[in-house]
Length: 500
Image (cartoon, rainbow, N blue to C red; front, side):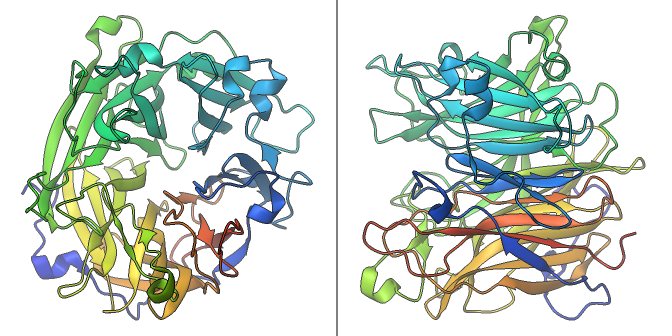
């Protein structure tokens, strides 16, 4: 295994959570969007958000809301329907949104991004992107530049002639473009994952409201098959810039995805992930390339992985599991956003995390993280696993780092004796043997009528002080039963004392 800087022993790879000289200031939390605020809430929440210069902005299906980052007061009297920027600009192909919306903050240009898939009655699929004109969501000058990208020409079709469904889109900001990835799901075979498509969007023109150049896309497999086999390295995540220093001029965009165990009904472990190098040439698209670069990592078993049903990752227990048999989906079959990039000048660092199995005699799950470094092709620099006990299931992580190299990851926890709650953990990447876990919120309810839990969460860093971490994810204040939809989201922020 190549390591950019040093080789770590297996023991050093485990992050032991305990006392540390690096303490966080108070972890402050407040309520985000809740199902009770929405006219038509869904069971599948997709909570995510980002911190900007003045507000934190959040998405849940299919609405968005923003909060003042000092007072936490909501910007709008109620969550806004997610199609609003597109309706206002009369983009009829972008008003049929069903989920998978993403909120991002372009830290280089200081602009907000709303990106979401739309499926109009025509049967076509569109990816719809709104770029704000300002960093202040309360400004009277705020307006949105909106774009609709037809996806069907790059999705491929199955033997029945049906276009593959563009699932689980992930969005990243890079200096030379916005990048988005899609899983290709076969609608005629129970939405089986058969490949991925990754596209570069014309960020330069989109920031000014000008006509965007055609998106540049690549697939894997290429060409896209008519009758694809189960794809095991799905859910590609583009690198997303953290901090105000952009990647070096001409730097390719990098993306990552999991490499699940072989689909042989027996294998349960993997020892690699996938790195992807996307080189875009806007002047001459024929020179653009997309290359797979496998990376060796410490062996892992994906969270809740079942060799006979590799796409079924439901095993996280709740207090009511014994009576309702509702197991929460760990979404352990993929890496989790963000793939957070930071340019320190002397080196470049990429962070990503995912849910793995940590129990030796149980299905208990924990959080695995990786740091990649390198001025050329990034390589695994170090990794660790967060699992400090033998009872709690930890899942649905998102990771980032501040400008002095402190890493923080947020995630949900649950067990047969614990309602699903929210925790965070942090450590300094130069001292990976020590870290601290803290309770952000104790849950007080379970999800008894659905296996859906979030699908993802998000951790971002304040672009002004470049120190304060902001995290958002799902929880329940009371049991969700029958046909009820009563989920909540919570937004947490904290800053480590070593960051100034």
